[in-house]
Each structure stands twice: as structure tokens, then as C-alpha cells.
Length: 501
Ligand SMILES: [Ca+2]
Image 1 (cartoon, helix red, strand yellow):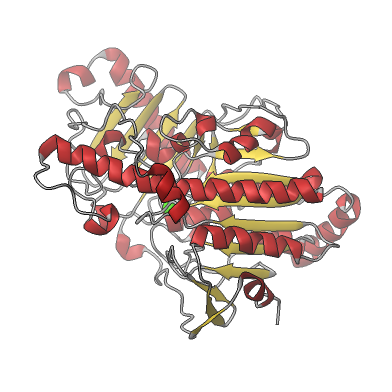
Image 2 (image 1 turned 90 degrees about the horizontal axis):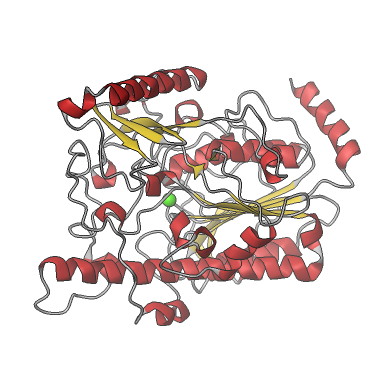
């Protein structure tokens, strides 16, 4: 296998060296698709991320397979669902596993990761890396490099962008590069930079139609969850005390504004960073041979269904932004095919002209980026969430999403929810809620069809339920073992510290 890989690499390097593109993957944490103006946001404007949509492709149906931070990052690297990559919840990623950065590195790419990592183990497969420990901090963050820690003064989003620019400036010039630039923002507890606080402090953000969702027809998991705007935002989330005397709906409305102002201000920092990086690529001419992709690790609720956070398979949790521009990508293209985070690793390899191993469960998105419509593209997407109860009392579930419907199974509760997304895009009406409705022939037939589709997908993806019981989850947490004292560095010194020893 090893000699085969080396041979493949040698041939590929010879055949594609002249035109192999650089790959810059910009990733953010908890950025909702509907908090991007190119996706029709009603709450903010993201001029720089929008540049990717204008100059390239914007996927409308881009999904995550397990809507939570650490599992999503393991899927990003491995192209595998959680049950195969060993990270169903907050479990340490085994860096000895095969993954996309190792393959790109072996294939002649200079590889790097900067920013949020959250996989516990030290990164492998990267020539240079500088990552946040665990969730990382918004202000004056500590970063990890091999064998040591350092602190950089300032706001994490700006620092991450600047580290990315410094990495690009100091990279070897004789190799194509693969850089994963991973922002902490806009993760909770939403601590924006001052200039963005100023932008949003007096803004009144429109409320979503489902802010006052009473969960009628969906009693299985939503009523007991603890990620509601009404009940679960903490004083640390809200930053300031509510005005005296505010109660009931008025208090919830105030909490929603406070949450959204800070969340959107954090998004604005990411958008600024995307702009700075795109400007650099444009000004240096690197843009001509660099594919830039933007996505987020999971979906996010902007008060939808009365919620913040992610985890649930409802549309705001399932969908993520996915945009890409660069050579060969059709400008203004809006693919509607189902893309998944399992597809990103195969896409990076395909862009680099490297083979996609059979162990990766996704499929390269390159044909879709070029504007093609493969006849055999998937028409359903499988999802599975494990972290029950987790920090927010979210019930474990799996399900399937098709172009028109969704079936969710809360397997520990033996409860199903089914939605007709064509008539009910905000998933307010569970068609299986009453016995009477469930027995209607069309509904019963659709239920049977979607259950069979879940069974088919579980077989295809080799999900035999091995992690259904948390006792079977791999051991090891997501905090780093690196406890070296943190020295203070500038961005340039920090990047210099990532040079291989
Ligand atoms: Ca996340």
C-alpha cells in the first residue's frame, strides 16, 4: 500500500505539478447559513463572504452529518461519518488515522492548520500548525505549537487572519499549499471586537417567525432541550443585566436582541478576515491558482424554533454555508445538489489531482464546482447525532433528508418526526404526531419509504449503531495534553515558532 501510494504521488507530482492549485479552506465555528447575505440573510450583511458567491459557487443544500464541533472536524479530516472515524461526540481524535492533510502532504503539498482545532490530540499531517487549545479564548488567546504554548495579544479572529497571512507570506514557494484557516468565531460566548460591537449595539434585529415555537406536534425532544433563548442564555452570554422590570415576552425579546447583536458582531469579524485574505490573494496574483472554500463546522439556530446552538437535525442545525471560488469554478453558480461535510476531504484530494481512497465515504464536489450535474448524485442525506444529553439536554437522533421530506428518529425515545419541507419549511408540523394523521395512506407510505431509506443509508455507510451506547465511545477528551507555560509572541514570531524542528 505504501509503495503504491508513493508511486501514485510521484506520477501525480510529475503530471500535475505545473497546474495543481493551492487550496485555502476557511472554516468558522457555528456560522449559520442564514447569517450570510449571499444566502439571503435577513439579519446581517457579509460583503466579503459574498465575494465567494459572486466569483464562484454557493451550495444551497450543504449539510453536516453530526451537527457539533468536534465530530464535524473529525469528519472534515477523514471524509467519514462519526461511527467510522471514532469521534461520535467530544472524543479525542486518533492522529494516527489516515486523513486528508496527510495525503496532501505526502502528495507534495505544504500543509498547515491555524486556529480552532478541538480534536484533543496534536495535529498530524501538517507541516506547520498553530492551534487553539480546546475552545480557545476570544481575547489574548493562548495557541499551541509543537511542544510549547504562546499567547498573542488581541482579538482571536483578527489574530487568526493575521497568522494565516503570515503563513502564506512565509510558505515555501516551490510547493502548492493546503491551508486550513479555522476561526473560533462566532462560537459562544460571542465576544466581538470593539469595532463590531459598535456596529450592532443599536441595531434592532428582525425576529424569526418561529421564535415563539410552542413545539406542539414535536413533544419528543424539543420541550426539554436547554438551548432556548427564553430560558438558557446565561449572564455571561448576555453580558449585561436586563433592564429592571422586564418580564415575559419582553424579556425574551430583549435576550434575543442581546444574543444576536454579539453573535452577528462576531460574524462580522470573520467576514473582515475573509476580505483581508481574498485581498492578499488578489494583490499577489495567488488568486489565479488558489481555490478558496468557506464553510462552518455545524449549523446554527438564530432564534429559530426559539433556539440558539446546533445539534438538532432541523434545517438550521443541518445546513451549513459552503462556498468556493478559484480556477475552474463557475462564477455565480448555485448548485442545489446535496453536499455533505463527508465530501470535503475527497474534494480537496480531487482538486490536488490525488486519488480519493475508498475509506472516505463522501464524494468529490469538483464536478459540481465546474457546473456539471452527475446523473448519479445522491438524492438523500443521512444524519446522526450522539451527544445525549450533552450540555444542552439534546436527545440522540438520526434521520434522513430528501429534496421534499425529512424523517427524524429519536431512537432512545422510540419517537419519529416527519416533515413535508415543501409545505412546511420551518418544520412546525410533525406529520406523525397523531394516530389519525399517521394512518392516512399517503403519510403512512411516505413514512415507510423514508424508514427504508434510512436502513439503506445505514447499510451503505456501515452504521450498525456501534456508538449508540455512550459506554462504547472511544476514550480521551478534547483538551490538549500540552501544558507548557505560555510565552508571549507576536504573529510573526508565532509563525516562526511553527517551523519544523
Ligand atoms: Ca461548532
